[in-house]
Length: 364
Image 1: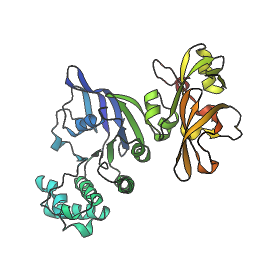
Image 2: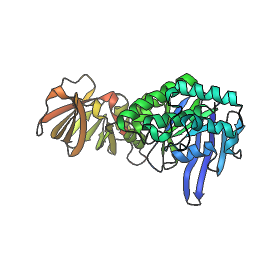
Image 3: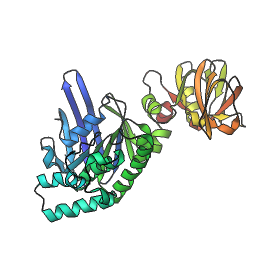
Image 4: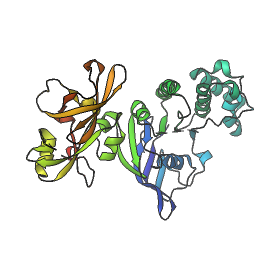
């Protein structure tokens, strides 16, 4: 096991194509870190730099104390799990698990020990004589994980390993991966575009956009204190609501409604009186037609779409010319056309600079 350090790493494919831009990030020994972002953000390229599959243009990459910029992949003591299972169809599960160790000329008894241990951990013991075509998607993914485990590497690199699984199996397998990582304690870098996967799996999450690291922190930190509009919009499902409002003395004016603020949002509005600001609030933080507590702002709205989700409903509504989404308990019995009033606790309100897109509440 070891730390993995991106020391101001940049990867360019051409003079005007920068896939990873000055990435500075340290993954602790035994940590499960998730790299998340939309397609093309640079997360997979960063992972491939660790694996030695991409040359680094600038900066240093360290595994433990060793700089590995020019160390071949086979000598980095890492194991990678790809989006595709990449199993050998003519080999049994046992032989697929053992193949990498055989290439490394590992002793036969040691190969047998590692394969049997990995099979026991992954519940593959009864499948060792089968070939991949006789396995389900989840079983094939476990074999791919097992092939990485038997290497006993310093770090696991996982590139969207669950994207080929159906929704139910994806939930089950991500729990298995978490249990496995906690049991083995191996440093793990996990790449995904799915923010739900990131939130449920990562000890820390690193959010990337256009090759640039936007924010890194524990899931609650990114959810409650996003540093900018991109992180606020990307983390959380349903996505955060945004609306443009005019800053006044300790308040914000949204259309004809004056939102009386307190705390950090009030300070941000006070410092920028007369300017347009971008406010953000999460659908689950909107309280419907109840008695709002002290410090809450009120927002009247008209419901135009109701999506029933079982114990919850997604309400799409118009509020002062802005479309907003609220997540409320389904026992509220809201119908299309209803005039409602939402309350937003002030501590749940985010205020962004529309030009820099930075969170002024976090900055305050």
